[in-house]
Length: 281
Image (cartoon, rainbow, N blue to C red; front, side, top):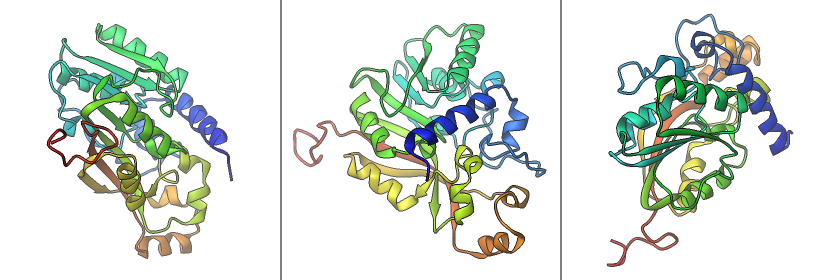
């Protein structure tokens, strides 16, 4: 069993490699994990191309949803994008928040930060910045964000509880997040659960859906809502790297499900107190 630090280093190494790949190579694999599939479709990603603010050069095909589409971003908002990669979701958030707002992308992979900054400079976006840091300890002040978004990132973090505590710290009272992520229903085969490539590819680092939602509630968030849910089907040629033909068939016939979900939740106006009093509601 790898330690949390070893898992982080694994993800950092893999996503440093991904930063140098193009979208076609990333999208053909599992969240960019490598092991290209011969199946010609994106395993995780949704189509961004018709969304305002989309910039092809910033899209590495690494997401598993469209959190900005559900994030209720308003003009002038301060938005933080967790695991901002090459800047795709940050630039779309900028189209929503406008020139009067600000977007901060946080990523702990130096190669991704460099790529995102280069993209922002080329596009002339002065109100989008990218900070290198761990989302378990964000390089931002408390109660600064109106909205937090994240796309297929929390499943890569071993200590998800720490990230949620940081989200609560960084959000303004009454502010909210919209996060797309991978969750599990049922039990993944141990070979997938332990596969390093699959961890970097967003699947084996995922936790049970009920546990994921319970963790959000445990950290004091309210109005927890699943805004979108989509089943993920991993092609046989990727599964064959981890499972025998018999094991693959058993997996297909089991009740185990892998899902991309987009979750919305709010920080209470008075954090740590139930929102049921006149002063709160």
